[in-house]
Image 1 (tube, helix red, strand yellow):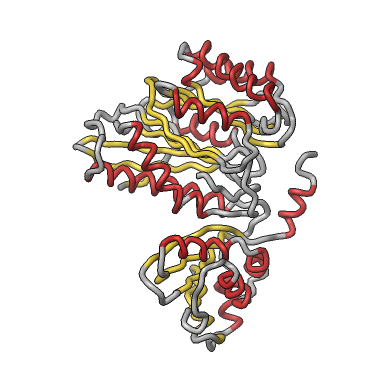
Image 2: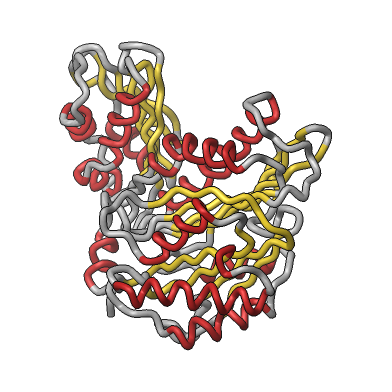
Length: 407
């Protein structure tokens, strides 16, 4: 597997565009389009929040019942959530505008929105923006970057990744982009992610691979514990790499799954590291747990602990907060047996062992915690299962950003 430069336009046959449509803000890109030259197999996972945005309902219908998908239209600024029948009708009008401009069926157009909940979309500007984007589509790296920038809300950086693999003697490419900085606690699987690939794979196996992989990637991310109304992860596969169709769980399927995992994990970590107001990516690795599910639960309990996140921001080796988060996770374990380490580019340090604090230097611990990526390593000494979760520190700026988000 080779990491390459690019995003959603890296795979053969995919084009993208990003532009300003004036949806909520002025002088910033706020609409994006991704388009395949040929129809695609589509897979998706969506928010488990009972309150689902209109685009989630629209996309779920397209992924489940349409013969193919060929385009994605995304707007930022307004989420089109809690907008009733009118909001859903606006999804159809957006799809109709794309269908007319691209000469494809409306039920092959996926629609996504992110931003403020409760506002109706300015459908005239959305429709005009959709037609504008259709005329700007290109297969270049720059075009993919413009699309990645256009879907940002409070994100501070755009998020892209691409990889190449070999399947059946053919070069297969996967590329992706995502947005997400706040209201991030995916359980799908405000977060949107899009993966494009020229792999030839059956729709059934594409969906199975995606649904399985999110359990250890996007579902292991949390910025603030809030599961958005709009969480959507879509994968489009157009088959243009020319490999024999993957229709069974063989070596080719495992190769594809590994590449998909690399894409999803990389994007998930980019979201965690760009959490609203964050100064550090905070990772927790739990290993030697008795079950996979318990390992996941323990890891997520630590990265979602507000007190632990605040300690990471303060570069304070307050291991008691980590132990506390493990203890209220609901998983049964013996605290006298576990070991806890802190690790970053500055080094690795044992800080808790045999039920008490280890003999460590607070000064050295502060150096470790002052790096932009910090990891807590938890050895449960109960089995051989592992899990990793990603979050970020909790800063003053998180409150500032969300105190006046609507204005």
